[in-house]
Image (tube, rainbow, N blue to C red):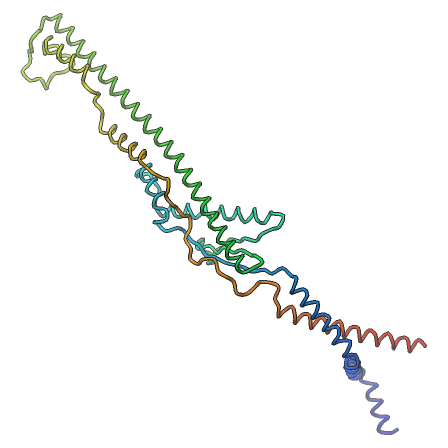
Length: 327
């Protein structure tokens, strides 16, 4: 046995080495096929990148409005409800809550369209309700930024309109309540006046029956209903005439209610601006698109083309070998 025979025998007993070398040789001989497949894959990838719909995401961060942004609304509530009006902090929380709810409803409506639009609202800081991160996806960077700003403004205007309508309804209700209170107090005052006149008339009747024409008391401040007739019929007649033309005696509460009603009637809501949010970060102009990723797509195209080319080469060689053995 020669040395060459020993080498051949060693190779025959090491199939993995022989297969690896043979595999590399087959791939090298079929390199043109592999290169063609890679080029075709790259061309297809470039074509995909040319026609694929781009996705750009613009993001804004918002939080509750400043006190100045809801000053008109807050002042109106203070006038309408006085000490019962909500605190400014509670009002800010309520307003941003309504804004977030309306924006979420808009996002759901956009997602249910025939051509869905992606608008998302989530916490900017995990575990904290505020601030909120609002994102919108479009097919261009400028379009994403512009559309996100429009949707935020649209929601803000909607919430402001709703708050003004609620405030208008509250004002009408409060005005009705105050007007009813004034009427009730006037009725009570009128009844008190009529009762006073009846009491004096009753005392006059007693004085006339007792033939008391002149005052019989020295201290008039101690006069009671039972002793009123002692003032004399002349004085009592004068009192009746005076009471009949005397204005109603109204309490301080009546005038306080009247003043509150006048303050509400003088409220002017037209032309006032109110905002339900404040920007922490305005809608960004994205500089990197979400998809398609050019570099990743080309790398995957090269890998996929190479794998397909290698598969073609190895499959073709395997088929030739099988045919050769069959013959």
